[in-house]
Image (cartoon, rainbow, N blue to C red; front, side, top):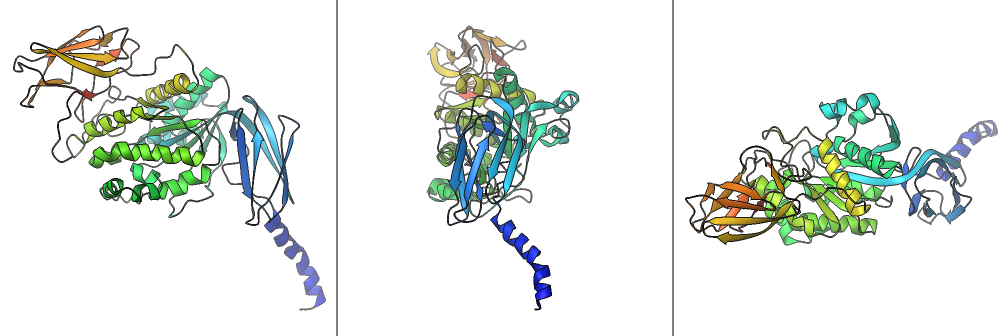
Amino acid sequence: MNLKKLLLMLPAIAGVIQAKADIRLPDIIGSNMVLQQQSRVKLWGWADPYEKITVKGSWDDKVYETTGTRDAKWEIELQTPAAGGPYTISLQGKNTLLLENVLIGEVWLCAGQSNMEMSGSWGLQDIQKELPQAHRQELRFFHIPKTTAAFPQEQVRGQWVVCDSNTLKTFSAVAYFFGKHLRQKLGGPVGLIEAAWGGTAAEVWTPDRIVNSSPVLKKAATLIQPSGMCPFIPGSAYNGMIAPIVSYTIAGVTWYQGENNTDAAATYRPLFTAMIDAWRLAWKQPLPFYYVQVAPFRYKKINAGALLREAQWQCRVIPHTGMVATNDITGNVNDVHPQNKHDVGLRLANWALADHYGRTGIAYKSPEYKSMSVKGAKAFIKISGAEAGLKLKGDTLAEIQIAGADKVFYPAQAVIQGDTIVVWNTKVKKPMAVRYCFTDTAIGNVFSSAGLPLLPFRTDRWAFPGF
Protein backbone atom coordinates (compact mmCIF):
# COMPACT_ATOMS: atom_id res chain seq x y z
CA MET A 1 0.00 0.00 0.00
CA ASN A 2 1.43 3.39 -1.01
CA LEU A 3 1.53 6.44 1.24
CA LYS A 4 -1.23 8.25 -0.65
CA LYS A 5 -3.74 5.41 -0.13
CA LEU A 6 -2.81 5.16 3.54
CA LEU A 7 -3.40 8.87 4.09
CA LEU A 8 -6.80 8.60 2.42
CA MET A 9 -7.77 5.73 4.73
CA LEU A 10 -6.70 7.38 7.99
CA PRO A 11 -9.93 9.38 8.59
CA ALA A 12 -12.01 6.20 8.17
CA ILE A 13 -9.72 4.24 10.49
CA ALA A 14 -9.90 7.03 13.07
CA GLY A 15 -13.69 7.00 12.80
CA VAL A 16 -13.81 3.29 13.53
CA ILE A 17 -11.51 3.70 16.52
CA GLN A 18 -13.58 6.61 17.80
CA ALA A 19 -16.85 4.67 17.34
CA LYS A 20 -15.51 1.83 19.45
CA ALA A 21 -14.63 4.32 22.16
CA ASP A 22 -18.08 5.91 22.37
CA ILE A 23 -20.01 5.47 25.59
CA ARG A 24 -23.26 3.71 24.80
CA LEU A 25 -26.56 3.26 26.63
CA PRO A 26 -29.21 0.53 26.65
CA ASP A 27 -32.46 1.58 24.99
CA ILE A 28 -34.29 1.70 28.33
CA ILE A 29 -32.18 4.77 29.17
CA GLY A 30 -32.86 7.65 26.81
CA SER A 31 -34.62 10.90 26.09
CA ASN A 32 -38.27 11.15 27.22
CA MET A 33 -37.75 8.59 30.00
CA VAL A 34 -39.15 8.82 33.50
CA LEU A 35 -36.79 8.18 36.42
CA GLN A 36 -38.09 7.10 39.81
CA GLN A 37 -38.32 10.09 42.10
CA GLN A 38 -36.35 10.52 45.32
CA SER A 39 -34.30 7.40 44.67
CA ARG A 40 -30.79 6.27 43.89
CA VAL A 41 -31.32 5.39 40.24
CA LYS A 42 -28.77 3.54 38.16
CA LEU A 43 -27.52 4.53 34.72
CA TRP A 44 -25.35 2.04 32.90
CA GLY A 45 -23.91 1.08 29.55
CA TRP A 46 -20.74 0.29 27.67
CA ALA A 47 -17.50 2.12 26.93
CA ASP A 48 -13.79 1.51 26.52
CA PRO A 49 -12.17 -0.36 29.40
CA TYR A 50 -11.19 2.10 32.16
CA GLU A 51 -12.74 5.03 30.28
CA LYS A 52 -13.58 7.90 32.62
CA ILE A 53 -17.24 8.95 32.44
CA THR A 54 -18.96 11.93 34.05
CA VAL A 55 -22.72 12.33 34.40
CA LYS A 56 -24.77 15.36 35.39
CA GLY A 57 -28.50 15.85 35.77
CA SER A 58 -29.85 19.36 35.29
CA TRP A 59 -31.91 19.19 38.49
CA ASP A 60 -28.84 19.97 40.63
CA ASP A 61 -25.17 20.92 40.38
CA LYS A 62 -23.75 17.56 41.33
CA VAL A 63 -21.35 15.85 38.92
CA TYR A 64 -21.04 12.06 39.17
CA GLU A 65 -17.98 10.19 37.98
CA THR A 66 -17.24 6.56 37.22
CA THR A 67 -14.75 4.47 35.27
CA GLY A 68 -15.43 1.66 32.83
CA THR A 69 -14.47 -1.86 33.81
CA ARG A 70 -12.06 -4.12 31.99
CA ASP A 71 -15.17 -5.74 30.46
CA ALA A 72 -16.07 -2.43 28.74
CA LYS A 73 -19.04 -1.81 31.05
CA TRP A 74 -19.89 1.07 33.34
CA GLU A 75 -22.59 2.04 35.78
CA ILE A 76 -23.31 4.92 38.09
CA GLU A 77 -26.01 5.92 40.58
CA LEU A 78 -27.70 9.33 40.63
CA GLN A 79 -29.88 10.78 43.35
CA THR A 80 -33.18 11.98 41.92
CA PRO A 81 -35.28 14.82 43.37
CA ALA A 82 -39.03 14.94 43.95
CA ALA A 83 -41.32 14.60 40.95
CA GLY A 84 -40.81 17.20 38.25
CA GLY A 85 -39.11 18.11 35.02
CA PRO A 86 -38.43 18.17 32.19
CA TYR A 87 -34.68 17.84 32.75
CA THR A 88 -31.60 16.93 30.77
CA ILE A 89 -28.84 14.47 31.60
CA SER A 90 -25.41 14.88 30.07
CA LEU A 91 -22.92 12.02 29.82
CA GLN A 92 -19.30 12.74 28.96
CA GLY A 93 -16.66 10.19 28.05
CA LYS A 94 -14.67 10.19 24.85
CA ASN A 95 -17.95 11.32 23.34
CA THR A 96 -20.88 13.31 24.74
CA LEU A 97 -24.51 12.20 25.07
CA LEU A 98 -27.39 14.48 26.00
CA LEU A 99 -30.68 12.99 27.18
CA GLU A 100 -33.53 15.45 26.86
CA ASN A 101 -37.10 15.84 28.11
CA VAL A 102 -36.42 13.57 31.09
CA LEU A 103 -39.07 13.52 33.82
CA ILE A 104 -38.84 12.48 37.46
CA GLY A 105 -41.85 10.64 38.84
CA GLU A 106 -43.27 7.15 39.37
CA VAL A 107 -42.25 4.20 37.18
CA TRP A 108 -44.26 0.98 36.92
CA LEU A 109 -43.71 -2.24 35.00
CA CYS A 110 -46.92 -3.63 33.48
CA ALA A 111 -46.53 -7.26 32.44
CA GLY A 112 -48.42 -10.43 31.59
CA GLN A 113 -50.20 -11.98 28.64
CA SER A 114 -52.84 -10.87 26.13
CA ASN A 115 -55.20 -9.07 28.50
CA MET A 116 -52.28 -6.84 29.49
CA GLU A 117 -51.11 -6.58 25.89
CA MET A 118 -54.49 -5.49 24.47
CA SER A 119 -54.39 -1.97 23.05
CA GLY A 120 -56.50 0.38 21.00
CA SER A 121 -55.33 -1.44 17.89
CA TRP A 122 -57.42 -4.40 19.09
CA GLY A 123 -60.54 -2.28 18.63
CA LEU A 124 -61.10 -1.42 22.29
CA GLN A 125 -63.81 1.22 22.48
CA ASP A 126 -62.65 2.63 25.82
CA ILE A 127 -59.31 3.52 24.18
CA GLN A 128 -60.95 4.92 21.07
CA LYS A 129 -62.82 7.35 23.31
CA GLU A 130 -59.51 8.47 24.86
CA LEU A 131 -57.70 9.28 21.61
CA PRO A 132 -59.05 12.83 21.03
CA GLN A 133 -57.59 14.00 24.36
CA ALA A 134 -54.75 11.49 24.63
CA HIS A 135 -51.81 13.91 24.61
CA ARG A 136 -50.48 13.72 28.16
CA GLN A 137 -46.99 15.18 28.42
CA GLU A 138 -46.40 13.74 31.89
CA LEU A 139 -47.36 10.17 30.93
CA ARG A 140 -44.61 8.22 29.14
CA PHE A 141 -44.49 4.75 27.57
CA PHE A 142 -41.76 2.22 26.91
CA HIS A 143 -42.94 -0.84 24.99
CA ILE A 144 -40.71 -3.92 25.10
CA PRO A 145 -41.08 -5.96 21.89
CA LYS A 146 -41.62 -9.71 22.11
CA THR A 147 -38.20 -11.25 22.68
CA THR A 148 -36.92 -14.58 23.96
CA ALA A 149 -33.44 -15.73 24.91
CA ALA A 150 -31.76 -18.82 26.31
CA PHE A 151 -29.79 -16.69 28.78
CA PRO A 152 -30.44 -13.33 30.52
CA GLN A 153 -29.86 -10.44 28.13
CA GLU A 154 -28.50 -6.93 28.74
CA GLN A 155 -30.44 -5.01 26.10
CA VAL A 156 -34.03 -4.59 24.92
CA ARG A 157 -34.99 -2.60 21.86
CA GLY A 158 -37.38 0.31 22.17
CA GLN A 159 -37.66 3.95 23.09
CA TRP A 160 -39.46 6.14 25.58
CA VAL A 161 -42.33 8.09 24.02
CA VAL A 162 -44.82 10.71 25.18
CA CYS A 163 -48.43 9.55 25.43
CA ASP A 164 -50.45 10.92 22.52
CA SER A 165 -53.11 9.76 20.08
CA ASN A 166 -50.54 7.80 18.05
CA THR A 167 -48.48 6.14 20.79
CA LEU A 168 -51.58 5.21 22.81
CA LYS A 169 -53.06 3.16 19.94
CA THR A 170 -50.51 0.39 20.34
CA PHE A 171 -49.82 0.55 24.08
CA SER A 172 -51.42 -1.59 26.79
CA ALA A 173 -54.90 -0.30 27.61
CA VAL A 174 -54.81 -1.63 31.18
CA ALA A 175 -51.43 0.02 31.74
CA TYR A 176 -52.66 3.31 30.27
CA PHE A 177 -55.73 3.54 32.52
CA PHE A 178 -53.60 2.53 35.49
CA GLY A 179 -51.04 5.24 34.72
CA LYS A 180 -53.63 7.88 33.88
CA HIS A 181 -55.33 7.42 37.25
CA LEU A 182 -52.03 7.47 39.15
CA ARG A 183 -51.08 10.65 37.35
CA GLN A 184 -54.38 12.31 38.27
CA LYS A 185 -54.17 11.33 41.93
CA LEU A 186 -50.43 11.75 42.58
CA GLY A 187 -49.99 14.86 40.50
CA GLY A 188 -46.57 13.96 39.08
CA PRO A 189 -45.16 12.24 35.99
CA VAL A 190 -45.73 8.52 35.46
CA GLY A 191 -43.62 6.20 33.33
CA LEU A 192 -45.03 2.85 32.18
CA ILE A 193 -42.99 -0.08 30.87
CA GLU A 194 -45.02 -2.71 29.01
CA ALA A 195 -43.72 -6.28 28.84
CA ALA A 196 -46.59 -8.48 27.67
CA TRP A 197 -47.06 -11.45 25.37
CA GLY A 198 -50.41 -13.06 24.63
CA GLY A 199 -50.66 -16.77 25.30
CA THR A 200 -47.68 -17.00 27.63
CA ALA A 201 -47.66 -19.10 30.78
CA ALA A 202 -46.09 -17.80 33.99
CA GLU A 203 -43.21 -20.26 33.57
CA VAL A 204 -41.74 -18.31 30.65
CA TRP A 205 -41.64 -15.18 32.85
CA THR A 206 -39.87 -17.05 35.67
CA PRO A 207 -36.09 -17.65 35.61
CA ASP A 208 -35.55 -21.19 34.33
CA ARG A 209 -33.31 -22.07 37.27
CA ILE A 210 -36.32 -21.50 39.57
CA VAL A 211 -38.60 -23.76 37.55
CA ASN A 212 -36.02 -26.47 36.94
CA SER A 213 -34.91 -26.63 40.58
CA SER A 214 -38.42 -27.60 41.71
CA PRO A 215 -39.70 -31.06 40.70
CA VAL A 216 -43.29 -29.83 41.09
CA LEU A 217 -42.83 -26.75 38.90
CA LYS A 218 -40.69 -28.59 36.39
CA LYS A 219 -43.40 -31.22 35.93
CA ALA A 220 -46.12 -28.56 35.65
CA ALA A 221 -44.10 -26.81 32.95
CA THR A 222 -44.48 -29.88 30.75
CA LEU A 223 -48.22 -29.20 30.64
CA ILE A 224 -47.73 -25.91 28.80
CA GLN A 225 -49.24 -26.32 25.37
CA PRO A 226 -46.79 -25.09 22.70
CA SER A 227 -48.30 -22.48 20.41
CA GLY A 228 -47.11 -21.02 17.16
CA MET A 229 -47.71 -17.56 18.62
CA CYS A 230 -45.82 -17.66 21.91
CA PRO A 231 -42.87 -19.28 23.71
CA PHE A 232 -43.23 -22.16 26.15
CA ILE A 233 -39.67 -22.71 27.41
CA PRO A 234 -39.31 -21.66 31.08
CA GLY A 235 -37.39 -18.42 31.52
CA SER A 236 -37.35 -17.50 27.83
CA ALA A 237 -39.46 -14.32 28.09
CA TYR A 238 -37.83 -13.40 31.40
CA ASN A 239 -34.38 -13.61 29.82
CA GLY A 240 -35.34 -11.53 26.81
CA MET A 241 -37.78 -8.97 28.24
CA ILE A 242 -37.30 -8.67 32.02
CA ALA A 243 -33.63 -9.39 32.76
CA PRO A 244 -32.39 -6.46 30.63
CA ILE A 245 -34.29 -3.89 32.72
CA VAL A 246 -33.75 -5.12 36.29
CA SER A 247 -31.24 -2.32 36.90
CA TYR A 248 -33.87 0.30 36.01
CA THR A 249 -35.44 1.59 39.22
CA ILE A 250 -39.21 1.10 39.35
CA ALA A 251 -41.91 1.67 41.94
CA GLY A 252 -43.67 -1.65 41.39
CA VAL A 253 -45.34 -4.16 39.08
CA THR A 254 -48.84 -4.74 37.74
CA TRP A 255 -49.56 -8.20 36.35
CA TYR A 256 -52.41 -9.65 34.26
CA GLN A 257 -51.85 -13.32 33.45
CA GLY A 258 -53.10 -16.77 34.34
CA GLU A 259 -55.27 -17.98 31.48
CA ASN A 260 -52.50 -20.18 30.10
CA ASN A 261 -51.84 -21.86 33.43
CA THR A 262 -55.34 -23.24 33.93
CA ASP A 263 -54.30 -26.80 33.04
CA ALA A 264 -52.00 -26.81 36.07
CA ALA A 265 -53.96 -24.62 38.46
CA ALA A 266 -52.78 -26.58 41.49
CA THR A 267 -49.21 -25.41 40.96
CA TYR A 268 -49.95 -21.78 40.12
CA ARG A 269 -49.64 -20.60 43.71
CA PRO A 270 -46.06 -21.89 44.24
CA LEU A 271 -45.14 -20.85 40.70
CA PHE A 272 -46.46 -17.29 41.01
CA THR A 273 -44.91 -16.97 44.47
CA ALA A 274 -41.55 -18.08 43.09
CA MET A 275 -41.83 -15.68 40.16
CA ILE A 276 -42.56 -12.71 42.42
CA ASP A 277 -39.68 -13.66 44.72
CA ALA A 278 -37.34 -13.94 41.72
CA TRP A 279 -38.30 -10.52 40.36
CA ARG A 280 -37.90 -8.91 43.76
CA LEU A 281 -34.49 -10.52 44.13
CA ALA A 282 -33.46 -9.27 40.67
CA TRP A 283 -34.49 -5.69 41.50
CA LYS A 284 -33.05 -6.01 45.00
CA GLN A 285 -36.19 -4.53 46.54
CA PRO A 286 -39.58 -5.82 47.81
CA LEU A 287 -41.53 -4.53 44.83
CA PRO A 288 -45.28 -4.12 45.31
CA PHE A 289 -47.03 -6.57 43.01
CA TYR A 290 -50.66 -5.97 42.06
CA TYR A 291 -52.34 -8.54 39.86
CA VAL A 292 -55.63 -9.28 38.14
CA GLN A 293 -57.79 -12.34 38.76
CA VAL A 294 -58.73 -14.00 35.47
CA ALA A 295 -62.23 -13.24 34.24
CA PRO A 296 -65.07 -15.73 33.65
CA PHE A 297 -64.45 -17.80 30.52
CA ARG A 298 -65.56 -21.13 29.12
CA TYR A 299 -62.37 -23.19 29.33
CA LYS A 300 -62.08 -26.55 27.58
CA LYS A 301 -61.16 -28.24 30.86
CA ILE A 302 -64.14 -27.79 33.16
CA ASN A 303 -63.35 -26.11 36.51
CA ALA A 304 -59.91 -25.00 35.28
CA GLY A 305 -60.79 -21.32 35.53
CA ALA A 306 -62.43 -21.62 38.94
CA LEU A 307 -59.41 -23.39 40.41
CA LEU A 308 -56.94 -20.96 38.82
CA ARG A 309 -58.86 -18.04 40.34
CA GLU A 310 -58.71 -19.79 43.71
CA ALA A 311 -54.93 -20.19 43.36
CA GLN A 312 -54.65 -16.48 42.57
CA TRP A 313 -56.78 -15.66 45.62
CA GLN A 314 -54.46 -17.76 47.78
CA CYS A 315 -51.49 -15.70 46.55
CA ARG A 316 -52.88 -12.58 48.21
CA VAL A 317 -51.04 -13.62 51.41
CA ILE A 318 -47.71 -12.80 49.75
CA PRO A 319 -46.55 -9.56 51.42
CA HIS A 320 -47.19 -6.33 49.55
CA THR A 321 -49.42 -7.86 46.90
CA GLY A 322 -53.01 -7.17 45.97
CA MET A 323 -55.56 -8.77 43.67
CA VAL A 324 -58.17 -7.12 41.45
CA ALA A 325 -61.42 -9.00 40.84
CA THR A 326 -62.96 -9.14 37.35
CA ASN A 327 -65.90 -11.52 37.83
CA ASP A 328 -68.32 -8.66 37.18
CA ILE A 329 -66.92 -6.93 34.09
CA THR A 330 -67.04 -9.50 31.32
CA GLY A 331 -69.90 -9.49 28.87
CA ASN A 332 -69.05 -12.65 26.95
CA VAL A 333 -67.84 -15.83 28.66
CA ASN A 334 -66.85 -17.22 25.27
CA ASP A 335 -64.24 -14.48 24.86
CA VAL A 336 -61.10 -14.73 27.00
CA HIS A 337 -60.49 -11.02 26.38
CA PRO A 338 -62.95 -8.80 28.30
CA GLN A 339 -63.31 -5.46 26.56
CA ASN A 340 -63.52 -3.37 29.73
CA LYS A 341 -59.92 -2.43 30.46
CA HIS A 342 -60.79 0.89 32.06
CA ASP A 343 -62.11 -0.61 35.28
CA VAL A 344 -59.23 -3.10 35.50
CA GLY A 345 -56.68 -0.28 35.24
CA LEU A 346 -58.63 1.83 37.72
CA ARG A 347 -58.82 -0.98 40.27
CA LEU A 348 -55.09 -1.67 39.94
CA ALA A 349 -54.35 2.02 40.43
CA ASN A 350 -56.51 2.17 43.54
CA TRP A 351 -54.59 -0.78 45.01
CA ALA A 352 -51.32 1.05 44.36
CA LEU A 353 -52.62 4.35 45.74
CA ALA A 354 -53.91 2.82 48.97
CA ASP A 355 -51.37 0.07 49.61
CA HIS A 356 -48.15 1.56 48.23
CA TYR A 357 -48.69 5.31 48.40
CA GLY A 358 -50.72 5.31 51.61
CA ARG A 359 -53.66 7.29 50.30
CA THR A 360 -56.73 7.03 52.49
CA GLY A 361 -60.42 7.00 51.70
CA ILE A 362 -59.99 4.75 48.66
CA ALA A 363 -62.08 1.62 48.13
CA TYR A 364 -59.63 -0.88 46.71
CA LYS A 365 -60.13 -4.30 48.36
CA SER A 366 -62.92 -6.54 47.17
CA PRO A 367 -64.95 -8.21 49.93
CA GLU A 368 -64.05 -11.87 50.43
CA TYR A 369 -65.14 -15.00 52.26
CA LYS A 370 -64.20 -15.11 55.94
CA SER A 371 -66.05 -17.96 57.65
CA MET A 372 -69.12 -20.22 57.63
CA SER A 373 -71.40 -21.28 60.43
CA VAL A 374 -74.48 -23.51 60.31
CA LYS A 375 -77.75 -23.12 62.16
CA GLY A 376 -80.25 -25.81 61.35
CA ALA A 377 -80.58 -26.10 57.59
CA LYS A 378 -79.06 -22.71 56.84
CA ALA A 379 -75.45 -21.69 56.26
CA PHE A 380 -74.30 -18.25 57.37
CA ILE A 381 -71.40 -16.92 55.31
CA LYS A 382 -69.45 -14.13 56.97
CA ILE A 383 -67.76 -11.74 54.53
CA SER A 384 -64.73 -9.61 55.40
CA GLY A 385 -64.31 -6.15 53.88
CA ALA A 386 -68.05 -5.55 54.01
CA GLU A 387 -68.41 -3.70 57.28
CA ALA A 388 -70.78 -1.23 55.63
CA GLY A 389 -72.84 -4.10 54.28
CA LEU A 390 -73.20 -5.90 50.97
CA LYS A 391 -75.48 -4.95 48.13
CA LEU A 392 -77.12 -6.99 45.42
CA LYS A 393 -77.42 -6.03 41.76
CA GLY A 394 -80.60 -7.66 40.57
CA ASP A 395 -83.46 -9.38 42.36
CA THR A 396 -81.83 -12.72 43.13
CA LEU A 397 -78.38 -13.59 44.41
CA ALA A 398 -76.80 -15.48 41.51
CA GLU A 399 -74.20 -18.24 41.20
CA ILE A 400 -74.43 -19.58 44.74
CA GLN A 401 -74.62 -23.29 45.57
CA ILE A 402 -74.95 -25.40 48.69
CA ALA A 403 -74.14 -29.05 49.48
CA GLY A 404 -74.44 -31.55 52.30
CA ALA A 405 -72.24 -34.47 53.24
CA ASP A 406 -73.01 -36.22 49.93
CA LYS A 407 -71.08 -33.44 48.12
CA VAL A 408 -73.94 -32.84 45.71
CA PHE A 409 -74.33 -29.12 45.05
CA TYR A 410 -77.71 -27.50 44.48
CA PRO A 411 -78.56 -23.96 43.39
CA ALA A 412 -79.24 -22.12 46.60
CA GLN A 413 -81.57 -19.47 47.84
CA ALA A 414 -79.76 -16.67 49.61
CA VAL A 415 -80.37 -13.34 51.29
CA ILE A 416 -77.97 -10.65 52.45
CA GLN A 417 -77.98 -9.57 56.07
CA GLY A 418 -75.39 -6.83 56.52
CA ASP A 419 -71.99 -8.48 56.01
CA THR A 420 -73.46 -11.99 56.05
CA ILE A 421 -75.06 -14.13 53.34
CA VAL A 422 -77.67 -16.62 54.53
CA VAL A 423 -77.82 -19.65 52.22
CA TRP A 424 -80.15 -22.65 52.04
CA ASN A 425 -81.89 -25.23 49.86
CA THR A 426 -84.70 -27.48 51.07
CA LYS A 427 -82.87 -30.52 49.65
CA VAL A 428 -79.91 -29.92 51.97
CA LYS A 429 -80.89 -30.60 55.56
CA LYS A 430 -77.43 -30.18 57.04
CA PRO A 431 -75.20 -27.80 55.00
CA MET A 432 -71.55 -28.73 54.70
CA ALA A 433 -70.31 -26.42 51.94
CA VAL A 434 -71.19 -23.28 50.02
CA ARG A 435 -69.73 -22.03 46.76
CA TYR A 436 -70.12 -18.60 45.16
CA CYS A 437 -69.10 -17.95 41.55
CA PHE A 438 -67.04 -21.12 41.72
CA THR A 439 -67.46 -22.18 38.11
CA ASP A 440 -65.49 -21.16 35.05
CA THR A 441 -68.20 -18.86 33.66
CA ALA A 442 -69.91 -17.50 36.78
CA ILE A 443 -70.59 -13.75 36.78
CA GLY A 444 -71.27 -12.41 40.24
CA ASN A 445 -73.80 -9.85 41.40
CA VAL A 446 -72.82 -9.24 45.05
CA PHE A 447 -70.84 -6.09 45.81
CA SER A 448 -69.46 -4.06 48.66
CA SER A 449 -71.16 -0.78 49.47
CA ALA A 450 -68.36 0.87 47.45
CA GLY A 451 -69.21 -1.20 44.36
CA LEU A 452 -66.39 -3.75 44.36
CA PRO A 453 -67.40 -7.34 43.54
CA LEU A 454 -67.38 -10.13 46.09
CA LEU A 455 -64.51 -12.48 45.26
CA PRO A 456 -65.39 -16.04 44.17
CA PHE A 457 -65.06 -18.59 46.98
CA ARG A 458 -65.76 -22.09 48.20
CA THR A 459 -65.91 -23.17 51.83
CA ASP A 460 -64.90 -26.78 51.10
CA ARG A 461 -61.61 -28.32 50.03
CA TRP A 462 -63.08 -31.27 48.19
CA ALA A 463 -61.05 -32.64 45.30
CA PHE A 464 -61.89 -31.95 41.67
CA PRO A 465 -61.40 -34.96 39.38
CA GLY A 466 -58.61 -34.40 36.88
CA PHE A 467 -56.78 -31.78 38.95
